[in-house]
Length: 537
Image 1 (cartoon, one colour):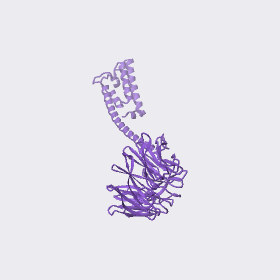
Image 2: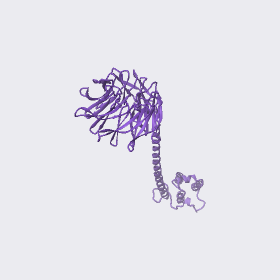
Image 3: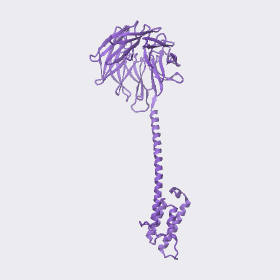
């Protein structure tokens, strides 16, 4: 019988008490006077005549019952025994010792079994508690992250900001470069702990900047290049130890530079491509030993170039694509043996091209997308077998397209986003089977758009950021199920936005940088901790 059941039963309690009282009364009678008759009960026969020993025996038995070691059956066995009992004897004949020993063994066995079960329950409970704790911590951790367009940081320049800013992460340091109409290239550092800008350095180019700066890290050396209205391509080196911008000797064209320069490292050689209003695509080489810009070759189109050139390396072949106001997309190849730019092919649109062409390689096929003033997005394929540019498909919008098409691959789906001056942003899917551009439902801005869209996927959600002349930064979400562009949020800035927003993801955090005509560079902590001390808010 278990201890709990024994003591919770009032009847058994009373029986035990009565038995003890009867036994104790016989003991007391034996101590105080001689027995009235010669016949003795079983209880008396089993008790010693010594008062101290008898009291000890009764006390010992009572404690055994109260502690749960002795049951009623054990007590009955003791009282019915006819052998002399001495609680203090170590003899094997001591009936009380034998009974108690057996009772203790049984109880220990039961306790061990019960304890083993208790331990297993404790382990299971501990495991469940740990799991709940981890789930709760994960939930708390997740709840600390917010996705919003609140609390941007601003950095003031001395002029309008037309070009797009560009990010560069170097170790645990985060830099942003942006050009301004104040004639300066601004480099600022973003302190992730305080969320504040730390002005790093500025470099004065001597004229307005409409070109977007671009970065290149080569070993431990960090470079920035930008074009300007004084006809020059500028390159500066970022010295992290001295916190200085060290200029290289600039490269001069014969026209102002709206085009944004782009880098390409091929082996141990470093190249920069840039377009100019002198109608030429210029390729220059950066000599790291002499710190000079060495002309490689230039390629002349039929009109001025506002478009920014883009590189694509396919095997051992190196291509550059650029649009021109001559209404053509030009693709040239670098011939390293002759040191020349060789025309691969041109593709003619119906109007001038100001849009920057962008590349995408899909299942071994090479595509170039570009917008045009003919209101159309054009996607052409670079066919290496026929050595030709072949039209894949076009999609017509309601206005000029000056923005650069932006690609995004999500699973097996290939998407292109582009903005049009019909005040809409479009998302289209490139269908390789039908050779068609399949449109999603567009998002209407309501004002003229000049900036280019940029994609970012965060936790499976697909976002596009864009600026507008309605003085707002817009972030729209692409719903792949409904195939619609849905507004996520906007943030109103004091002036129009011509600059293209640019994303930067660092671990679990996401940021958007964009310039505005109010002279400010804005950085939005798009995904951030809501209440973490010191985080960007």
